[in-house]
Picture 1 (cartoon, rainbow, N blue to C red):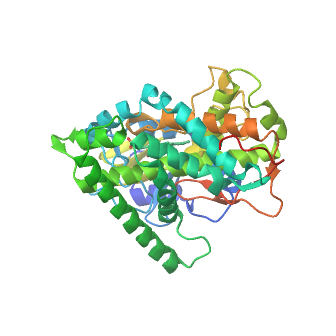
Picture 2: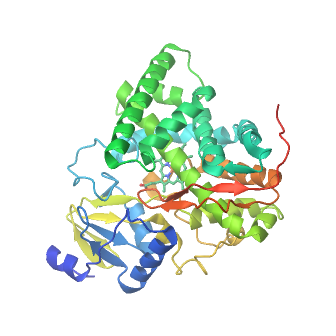
Picture 3: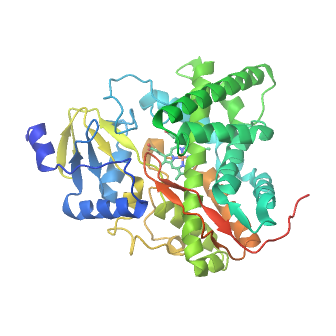
Length: 419
Ligand code: HEM
């Protein structure tokens, strides 16, 4: 372990700049990170506000487990301001300690496996309703026609929001997260601000309505009734929590669905095998979350010094780690860049960190698994074969949630099933 090395020297000897927002394909970013793992597994990038980039599964898992014991999750962004001890972060993903535990105590039962399982029939019907909208056409814009609205409606169902508003909410969330494709930065920022204002007005009206209505068995009622730190949540806190639910629940599932369908279009033999054996689709869900992991968390050191991958880092330093790079570490996965549908049938396979680890582990893990399983089962049933539309090119992006847009599929037209 390196100790007593002045910080500037440590940064200098480990310097290797890194751009989390680079305009490069995901595979290229992963190749660079794999080389980094071999040559300089913990490196310092001076870009932006500066951060340490982790590449080994074990180092990343060790930081995730040390939440509140040397690290905090605010700000969960490599370019955010230095942690000032303020807790103005997004609820609950940028809160730590007791307040964070208060939110999880309310959220975890509302997202329990039993509660999630009760949504299965409704979600399956929704998946088929979405497929019905384009199955007769022999082609679809997979993002707009499935990968975005399906997780959108799933969030609406678990939250207990009116399903008929799903398109409006999805539209706002899409603009808040991605701006406007092809627009200038100023135009995109103006569109983001407008969409944020509209979703805020919508949510404040919904919160007022639900406060006045009888309690229901959904996350909205659980949040309205909850006391965190001995106090009920204000409208603003409820809005922050609800917005995070949409951001966390939509982009991630959309990304895994988009990336996996691009892969499956290029590997029709795997599409054909997806439902062949009992347990294969559950393993495939885990494998696609491992292989296509979207989130890229950041943590800030809060103790005078902490050890990370053999280095001693002082308070205030930021560590940053695409979870995808942990999940592609050959120390734990054979041929990590390959998709093996059966990889997780073997119970000795190392669990992936695609849903995170430690106190911030994904609240929606059971819901995400259910949505992905239903999506693969229903898509496979209704599209026996498909390929990518040769006139369209999927566009990958990096950032704080890696993903792919513009996925268009072509296939043999099929019949609608629901009237
Ligand atoms: C494939 C889909 C998903 C993936 C890969 C995923 C991944 C993650 C990861 C890695 C974290 C931890 C981030 C960190 O430590 O900084 C997280 C947190 C979270 N996720 Fe998910 N997620 C998915 C789907 C969902 C869904 C469907 C919901 C809810 C509708 C959801 C809600 C949340 C929330 C609320 C948190 C914050 C938890 C906390 O800070 O305590 N996620 N997710």
